[in-house]
Image (tube, rainbow, N blue to C red; front, side, top):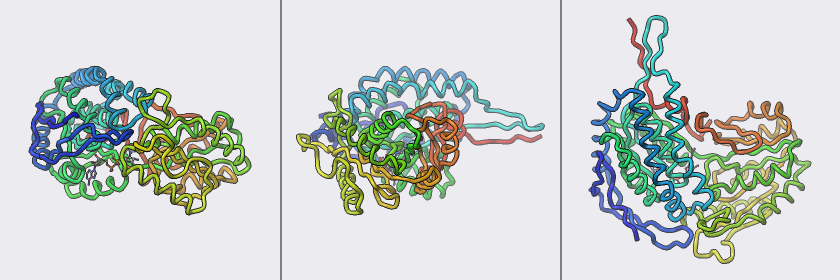
Length: 471
Ligand code: NAD
């Protein structure tokens, strides 16, 4: 059993003042695999003080110096790629294929920020005045369990590019992955205090980061409920916030789409990252006239999905991260049945032979109405809701009839129709005919999916304050 019993503060691994211990569980077996010592408010204050101290000099670094630091971070993180993959599979239950793919790109968060820095203008002239963009200050980074390494690394890369110093609080469910991250950041050899990592609970460490007046900004990825709490509390010290929150993303199949391509993509997409993905296309909108055809293809595709141990190479869907998450997903499947949606495949209970872990049967409901809970709320599990529509305009209306607005997907053989629909969807990212990713292109949500944008120049601006110097 491994023990994660140090935090990384002011360039050193130190024993935290907090003594509470959190048990780390392998979600595929529910066996205990480790213990995480939880830091407390005192540890958080010490780390914030270190970051504040380091900010004085780090905020004055040149772009060239920061590019060098980003290169060191990239190399250090890439050196630990296999450890990131192994811990993500063991502790989170990420499938072998997803964990490998996701961690292969961990270094690219630093590369994309290096590229951004090369073209970014930190100073402009307007009439006779200088307009300077300068780092906002100490940034509190709070991240979830479903993509721990990439969430942390994309935020750290942006903060460092801006000249900010950071205190990172990853999810308590990601203790083993956090240990690898801390070691990689230490190996990168940045000046002490620039990067600090404090393990701990959201209600303890997260609250201190949100309340502490020496933290200038919170960059948060997580649930909408916690995001709202952070935004409210952050207002007391007028902290800047970037909030990347939940989603219930629509996937519109237009009537000219190639169903043989679009439907399998829709099913695999909904189950990406075991269904625990904020951008998962969980509402599949299909023309009423094609509903039977879509149902038949979707059911056949679901029949081929392999649910199983995450380490097994052919597994498509691994376990839910925790018993709590498993139960939450079961509750939603029950609610779909109670509200009268048609169960196409899956259902409640565990797949045969996988009773020990937090495995869910990949589930598809059809004939779903958009006012049902399974269509309105983020389930965060492998559950897809198929919703019929009559016209393109109705599809757009249903797509936008949600409190969320993180991502949307459109399948069509007509590029003009794709653009027409994309322009009318209220979401921060719209993908046409597939699941594209570009770390230079802004990412973030409309409505209750968040505030602000990450990645590239749009993301960098969120870590900068604008100062006008007039003469
Ligand atoms: P969560 O909101 O429960 O926790 C996220 C982080 O916030 C954790 O580190 C947690 O310890 C911390 N936290 C909890 N309470 C806090 C408080 N009172 N103050 C400060 N911090 C607190 O989310 P989760 O269950 O870890 O992750 C799943 C959620 O994350 C889903 O809703 C998902 O959509 C969202 N998510 C969003 C994106 C995105 O980019 N939009 C990406 C990944 C996940």
